[in-house]
Image: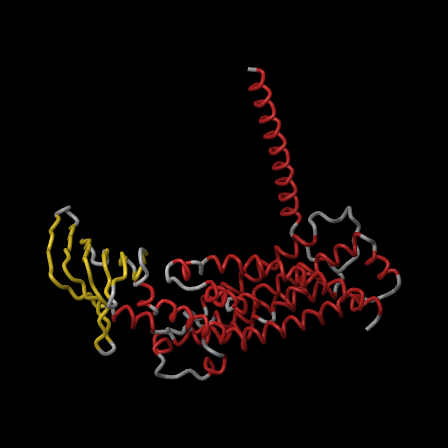
Length: 399
């Protein structure tokens, strides 16, 4: 590898790692926030929450890596063009391959990394994640015997234990049940206990009342000496782990169990998942080619209507949207499976044509003018808004 190629490789790699860390952190944070209820609702420790959060990372790496790469390549080449380094390289007689080679090597490494994570690490991380979530929600006994806590057991079912009494008894039991359409049930018992009968678990409530309120507002009150509230249904439902096609390993997807209920229900989803895994890795190469086609040539600053980084990201987003759209339809419409592979292949071919023909891939002139005018109007509107607030502040002080 030449000195210039090593220089480009070093700059692009540094930018790629920085973009990858920040992009991964942002996407990971948005995904983790959806798991907060694991601690708040299930009473699990922070360690379990962070373990579940860590297992999310492999699922977002294949999506984030191509975008981090297109940002790194476009920004690096744009900076080199601004510093006239691309013009010097072209003037020295170097071919476009000198610029493209280190970038494509980095893109190939990123593609291999994405393929390994998508097909090797992610399925096992997803399965472990589901096991942790199921185990935390199945730990119902430790959940409901906490004093003074109001816990959600199921949709429309809430339970609170006032205190723990000697001999494993419970005091001040309150249950709110709105699962039945058209009726709200409220249970209150002075004492109770958890009774295990084989695999079944029953909440025995003693000396209490049941309030039933109908849709019309009619209220009926039933007193009871003892009442058994079955918890085994919630325990079994929480213990049951349903694995989706995304949670399965690639060898299993290629040869699924015929008795798999998910496979029997929608066999096309397994084939669609295989197609997506075998095509998703290529987007790192596709996005690198797009960035090269957009920002790989030395250009005068007067020619640049839109920053190459914006153009590259806009085209990459459109291509990735097409890929997601095809993957989402592939399990229902058979010919979309071909589109899953056609999107990266066609995008790569178009980008290679721009590179070989020494053309710059740009957004249409009308789009560029529209975006420039829009930015100008927004700037003028912001300036006018600041002046209006300044005048209002001055008039208020004068009053």
